[in-house]
Length: 283
Ligand code: AMP
Ligand code: MN
Ligand code: MN
Ligand code: MN
Image 1 (cartoon, helix red, strand yellow):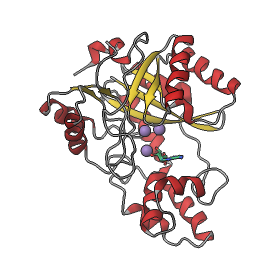
Image 2 (cartoon, helix red, strand yellow):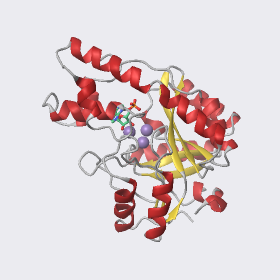
Image 3 (cartoon, rainbow, N blue to C red):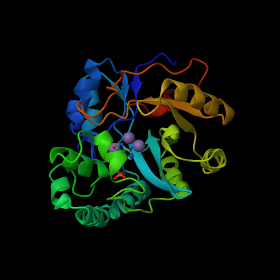
Image 4 (cartoon, rainbow, N blue to C red):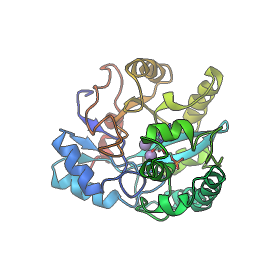
């Protein structure tokens, strides 16, 4: 069934969203979401609260996370869906992936100080809900608050990205490790928003090929991070690589996100939705 209002990608205060898991669940339910997943960056601390809140609203739930990976010198995001949140290897892997974030954030603040933006680390921390998870998004909110930029989109065009002040390169988990943590914990690995990466055609082919070799089985086709043309393009990639297709808003905040929870087109009817493959993992 592709005609299901599934939203399998969003963020809470446990990573870089602005709403709690409970507030997200209410908003998802109000928007007609039938199957939901909270996918905080490198973190599963909100899973129990999200699953419980989903139950309270009569929504089905899949466990979720979005793991930061380094592939071909680029950061790639791998969604994990339907895994066992108590799996020890998964928990340890995510903990290690979170590990470098504080030192990176301090370095980002030092870079920003060089262009006259003072106390950015302390400023970003005011937006952080989880001390282990300082994200560039928290810095972006600080730069908007202090009037350096008018919105977070402008921040990522002028700061915090490669070639701009405040960018610090970082080595995240390997593709192989992230896919293995998810699949060994009984879940499905899904390549998040593939159109967002600046890969050549050869690099993108290598990403999908290696992902499959390691056991990855899904790709996010309909997402708030894609244009309508990109839905078509990655539906074709799903067919070419025989991957299941996912749908998720990537909602972070009512103010910053242009795609609200559950407010997305349905998946193309001929694709296999990830929730069909994960039927026995749905709570
Ligand atoms: P981090 O995981 O600390 O590198 O932060 C990345 C986060 O910044 C993403 O998950 C988004 O929430 C946010 N973000 C928003 N726009 C962009 C962009 N153009 N480039 C990178 N990150 C962005
Ligand atoms: Mn984010
Ligand atoms: Mn992402
Ligand atoms: Mn995301």
